Length: 414
Image (cartoon, rainbow, N blue to C red; front, side, top):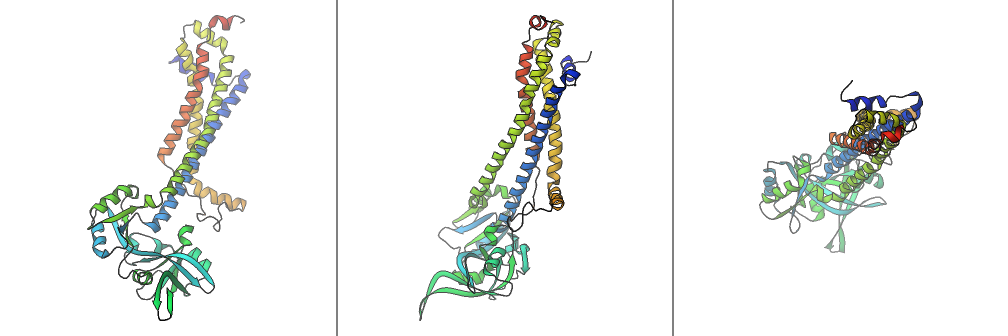
């Protein structure tokens, strides 16, 4: 006799018999349902992780990890402040910037935009925007009044590299002809595209000093952008950097500026997890119907086992093992399929698009036109544990019913 006996009997009951083909069909359906649910959960969460990563990288490519601002407005004498920030061991780079809302015009086209003045030598330390230029170049020279436009903004203005645009600030100046808005003509030297409409449509970049003159800041700057060695630790690192600065300054991290956006992404991931987990739950609780039918079919066998000395706890263990095996096989198949799909979804989707001659994420509609994926071990373990837990939970009631079988009652009409 094989030992433990509960495992031996439980494995035998999973085999198909001529009169139990329907039970075996339900068993197979439960396995397939669990496998599909687990695979879908792993794949969907991996794709959502990929989207979150892409959005975070594109946003932080423009926003920086933390920003130093003055308590009352502009930062005066920003060089020692930037030097003090860079002295912190967790700060990888710092760059000054000026920023303000302006109107930009070309011909009959008018658009509101945000002009950002950057230092061409320091900016690459905190941002990769100059690596996203799709036309022209980003060699900003002081006094040349060159400007780099976002791709959507350039399309709105119908501007190309070499065209001239007018920047108009809301701050008025008084001259002999009366009150007139401050205006300056810039030459478009480049067009960038980061893949985020918020920036491609509403941002223009110029040299730090040129933008400062237009905005009336002189030698002052709006703030200093920082790049940290760990963006996920930005909240407490921003507090640490603020303590080491010479003077009173506000240091804001990226989580404060985009907290609602990433909170919404996290909420969506949670909701998707719950919705797709219901697929696994439905498939897992199909085990209940499978085991209930097996218990009814095996009433005589259970009674004989009880008369041979098998305890109610052992009878219960037999059916728990049978249901757990169904859940284990289904979960294993789902994990294998989900991991394989999540690791290859970036190659599978383009192949399906070419095969069917369709485009799932058109580039003119979605600014992320591919389907990114990021498989995380924590998600795989969490989904695996949930599927196995639901499978075990589904076995308890049928196993309890089996353990309550009375041998005399079951064998009365045999």
